[in-house]
Image 1 (cartoon, rainbow, N blue to C red):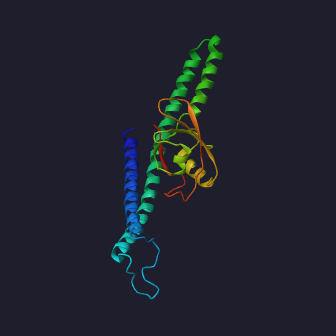
Image 2 (tube, helix red, strand yellow; image 1 turned 30 degrees about the vertical axis):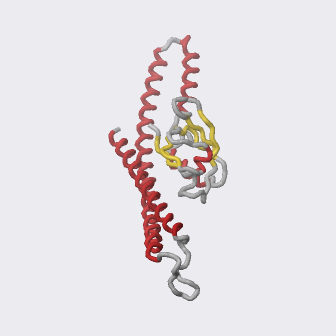
Image 3 (cartoon, rainbow, N blue to C red; image 1 turned 135 degrees about the vertical axis):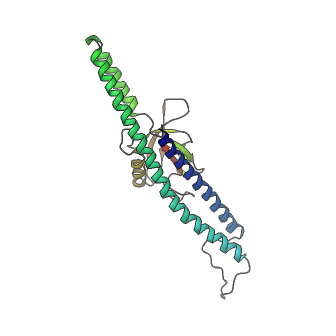
Length: 226
């Protein structure tokens, strides 16, 4: 369990680094805005002379920093994905072991029960199976303002129980979520979450899309829910 916690802390530290890099990149974009110039505008006039209406050193420095940060972000996103998959794999193994132990305990308890209580036991088992299938498998770590996730009403600390066809019973849940997300760009996905102390599920409709002003299709980060 200590190793799993270490993996989660590693993933969270990487996500924090990503947020810091994105904030740094936004600062450099603000510099370009202050110069009223974009990343790709020419720095020479129609006669081929250096422009005099912008600070060329400031602009070139900002552009160079933005390119560097974009490269760093691409590498960092790969490390985040690997770390989250490691966290999920370990957690899935732990849950499978617990489920097997619980099933054995239930079977032993059922064998010792009197015949008259069999129907009641079956009903309780069915209810437990339904509740187990809707247990959250991930928690929302962060939601970017103005993102598709934010517009759909997804909030930090929401616990995800259903993401389209994905539930806790789905193998490799977070990887499957990513694959499903990529296949549903600009199409609605029904997501059900537990919010706060309530065990009731709140239904949301997310529409993953690019070009909303930030990276990714949803603008949120989820991690496995323990």
